[in-house]
Length: 89
Ligand SMILES: [Zn+2]
Image (tube, rainbow, N blue to C red; front, side, top):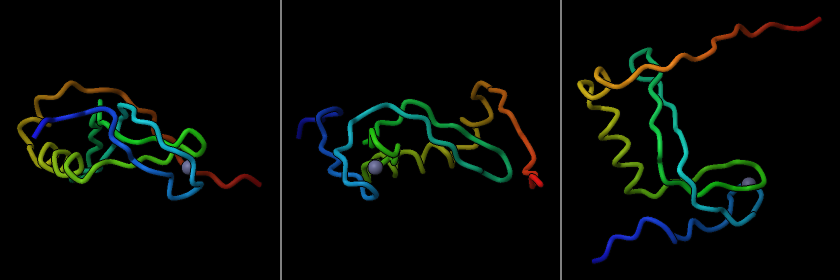
């Protein structure tokens, strides 16, 4: 079987029924209190609402990646903003 990364039909967005387009996206996961970002994930993205859909095999691959604590330990670090939620009066 030939591997084909692009051209996969992700179908319609579950939220607004727009046709999704394949893009490489970032996905973030909280693992044991730490934020891990997985980059270049092939996903179907809705141009209207931004909803993302990934293939089952991609989801499984991500699950494998993020359970590899050695890989996470060696990964480059990025800085992220952390702001507190405040109720405006
Ligand atoms: Zn949508």
